[in-house]
Image 1 (cartoon, rainbow, N blue to C red):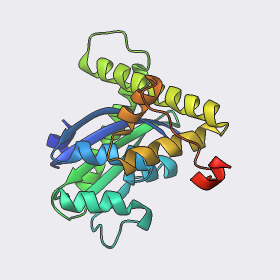
Image 2 (image 1 turned 180 degrees about the horizontal axis):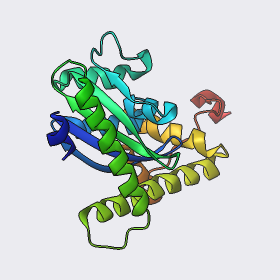
Image 3 (image 1 turned 135 degrees about the vertical axis):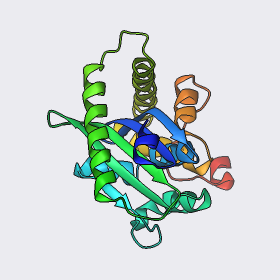
Length: 216
């Protein structure tokens, strides 16, 4: 619906709590990969819009995108995305997430399309707030429930890494994201492996001991 109303080529909706992100739904060419990369990096238009509480609109990735977005901007260019528009989802002064829209054309939104985005963000925020504990069989309710489950698994994995390495949970999440990015994996996959005890992240803060020292 967002794609049709605003006339863009892709859209993604994420639920957010601080730097924690849970995917709700995504549609359109290249959008899924870009949404996942934002979660992996902890940076991108979605995060900036959430932190500032203001829309973020980038038309030229080579001019407008911050340096910290570099991997995101490079992927956007490779997938043919020309512009991105991110709108925070806020209900009763509470930030719930972000609506991110992707367009193949490198052009800014007209005033009319910008107003449409603001209206969509208001409707989505109110809907999500009303369905925070989804009980029905509605597709949106099921998507929200899945997003909560996804976020819970990432939290659980972060807690396990934090407890094992005796580090803050926030640092544990950074390590999980770094491992995912370095290995070209979704954060969700890394989190699932940690929770399932198929993966254990090492404590790279410890001094390395070469083989000669170890033999002694």
